[in-house]
Amino acid sequence: MVYQPDINQGNYLTPTDVAKVRVGMTQQQVAYALGTPMMTDPFGTNTWFYVFRQQPGHENVTQQTLTLTFNSSGVLTNIDNKPALTK
Image (cartoon, rainbow, N blue to C red; front, side, top):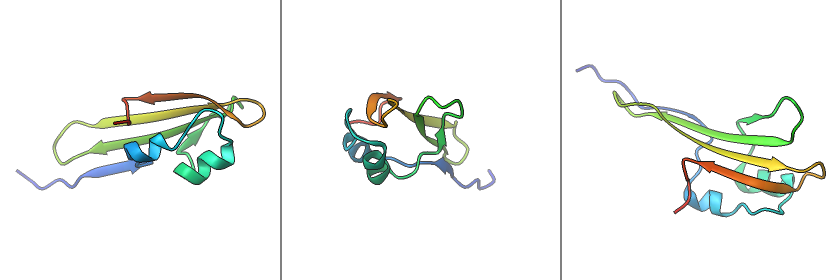
């Protein structure tokens, strides 16, 4: 078997990182806690995506996506965590 290195891409977040985020936080507070999101919604819906993809060696790719939705005032209104990054 040929060596194949692990491939990690995106925002690596631990359950502790995700637990810091609460509905009602501002965009600035979330960015301070989690860093810059991997993607933002290009259609202006104030949605941030923190995506982490990993392919360890010859194994299947896994992906974790944390989707945060903000209202027009920049306040966090929804947290969608798939698959769950919480304890």
